[in-house]
Length: 467
Image 1 (cartoon, rainbow, N blue to C red):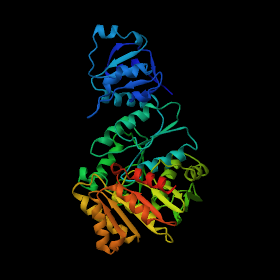
Image 2 (cartoon, one colour):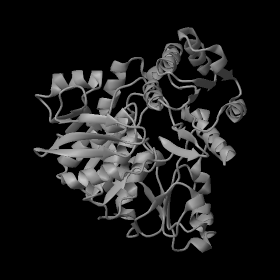
Image 3 (cartoon, rainbow, N blue to C red):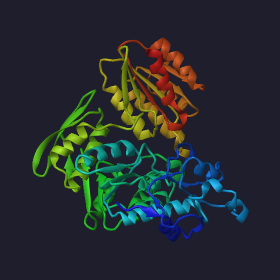
Image 4 (cartoon, one colour):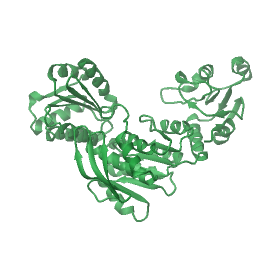
């Protein structure tokens, strides 16, 4: 593995060395002075409401060997006052954000290892976790932590590279151009698109535009292997139009694909199916329930096959996957199952979670649902569609909070759900009072909403209340 030097950074950023050593090796990078480690390089990020440049001295005092800043005027007297920083390095650039992109892109270039990039409207993080679990059975693997999948998180993930043999990078977006930027930095060899849903449709206007934005994942790739969910309507159409001109591998359950699940059995705690790998029919066990996790595992299998990983290791990676917290995090406390799936939400994710909740045939099913964000003019229609799904899935009790969540409650009522089984509050904290009075042993309680609603905090508080 090749590390960067100050000299490299100066060259790729067109930066100015204010003081310090051009030969200094920069192995670790940070943007937060609160967790600076000795020897780190601090990149001062300036955002809309925060300017990390004002903390450059604090970064050096806390142990950083090098700081990269913008907009700081250094005069001779100022530098002479830095007696405690004699062995420190200061680099000034025009724009630290652009410098971050250039530095990460350069580190990717000098460490020419395979990069798997993953995007999609729903399930990016859980798919990444599944793929990384499979890949790590053979290769030392660096993966995106949590959902740090934006223009800051992805470059810093690349800069964490040490002696890993492969990178698994998640790519998120809200607007056109964002995945284009990430792809240009990461230059992926394998590009994965999990699905095209309605997340961010308020920004992009249509599912067709969302597909275009997701396809930006190809912009930085040179003749990549493309892996797609062939059961997704728009991806299936794109696959049929492009399969003869591009290297595309399709996975799916319904549509005929290269990698498919057969004889699928969906249970409350897990799923099993058969899959043909290298000409052999293999039994696969997914330790997380839900049809969507079967698709995630098929994606991971496809990546594993592409990287020449043995079927036994692929199966083991799927069976032992550990998901990022707050994604289908299931706990049973005093006979009540709590499903904390509240890190984020979209209409498709809501539908999948409600479908899973409905699988508990012998239990009373309680759905605690909040607003879905970034739906724009489609917000009313899509929240009402969730209300229909609540009724279709035979949910026993619906508890909602949020400006648009009242539309979920209203539509569930219109479809035939009994009024006495529907609760709506403007104040989400009142939800806990209902749950305290309504829930009993044997119940299954699902929490689902967009991240900004912070329903995951409600789920944690409810779990504490049950203990």
